[in-house]
Image (cartoon, rainbow, N blue to C red):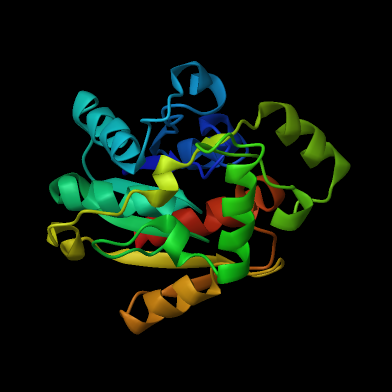
Length: 235
């Protein structure tokens, strides 16, 4: 059986996988869903120096501490950058990486430069204003495709501002992660910010799957997502 390592996107924490993890565990897999430094239940560790390399090290250290192998590394949204960095650092521990509506970055690319210009502009404006120059304020859940009042009520009090450096610090890759099989999953019932990344994945020969839900698939379509993750782990 595999070890699923589920990585949340900006503003969230490991708790966001609560609706997915039980199904994976019931199928016999181990599941780790860490919260990255500086957000949510680890917001007390937030400083302007928390960047992409911090989050990559978070996950590398987790895998090494658990001596995790045959890892299915799943990164949602921003965490696509983290998945790429981790796979490059410890490719021998990762059997598959799954980019869930997430960045597909190359060496030298920063997340902010991988967003559509309009969205990137909104980020920069919010960072310069209410973000005090070093934080990304929480985005509207409606813009992410979350509309059910119960889901909004569950997410809203748990989301926290995200460190800006994680979006401006570029990936530094050796190429070792290229040996790790990769899959892209696009969420197609929202503004589809990550369609260019689905196309980039397809151009690289990665399998690309679609889920008919908003960006927060682990919240709005957890059963469908869990079933697809189990299918991909078995393939």
